[in-house]
Image (cartoon, rainbow, N blue to C red; front, side, top):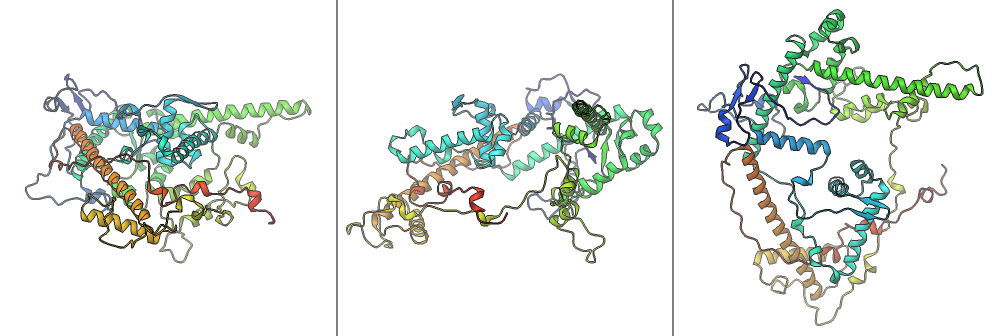
Length: 577
């Protein structure tokens, strides 16, 4: 198996393949139908027939998220037919790669029901692209992660993002205070919020087959390119070749393998086998993924060599500049200052380039990142692996020792003491909306099963019973005291019915969107679904309303309004520091 260089977003798979390569196409257009395209694909002589994936070997049977291998029947062929190259699936893959690289699903491929316009809030100008990234970051990170949102937008800081968020909060508060002045077209309903699409298991298996086929084609093509460039014996560096190149530098020079003169290749292969690809999770362990040991392509090592040389030149140039500036400034006072480069010059240059010097912390925390099982050879009970906290405590330097960290090295984050946080929430009894008219005409037993009001009129018995049960739960188990009147119960049941209708319609719209998404995927795969999708029943769209359960029953969504902020000096006042 090959370990490739990483660190930058993967490029889109857009390649032109010749007839001599692993797979190619004739002069036909990519817009031909599936039958003509299938007949125009030609494979190389060294193509491996696509076998039925042996999931019992490559995947563990303990993972519930992976589908298990099914036993082959007697009449099942040992080989599955080769799939024709699918342009549409590769376009879908390229679009996903682009979205991952941009960390944003571009709006150009969405159904545009609304459009963002540039605007200016205070002295800050927001472009449509910045707004799109802002809303996407809000959906993924939440509105409390201001540094994360700023890192995604890159052109706005935390203060500007907080100002934009505060604008929306003020608008929502204004609409809540004056619901009758709100335009109906400005009300966002539940079904208008986009939800994740869900496809059937059969569609997932078909997508897996297409992905496996494309992966094998790309792997065979890459191997051919590597063999042409480096030769049959040196295109892939395994443990044996790494040892040979490390001991025989003359061979490396003759073959143009200059990276072996700089790197200790046996250490690279050993790190891949014992550290980076040796996870305790069988799905990420090289022993369960393939039968061969880890190896590294020569092109990947060449890329690493280029990066190291380029970065070293930058560090050396920056170090010389810092040293010259220091020497020049000191010679104005002391002419006998020696012209030498010191360690602090290199540290200042590395810090100016934005490089992290704390390599020790990175290796100490790799056990947690890679989910490694680490054992202590000197411990008596050698049967249990060490915990991640114990590993980091042993490998990381002492946090109290300032010299062990040095300049530019990050210290471990101190734990946050929740004892110093004081949450002062507003009293529900102070809300004037909680007061109701307790007139004798409105008061009657609330547990009467025969009670029929406007909230349960026109619905079936099961739905009416569910509405009453939910209203009863709110009245009995809520921390807020409600007046025991018929009017309160009717208002509560009416809002519960309204929200249930909105949720039911939202689920219906989600199911319809799921079917549309799956139909598009079947078109991409150029296949027909084995089972036609079920026909959805028509659901009437509920009327819009500005009322919600939040007005009667506080769910805690607006906890920020009752949070009292206190400075550090207020919480630590009177204590010895």
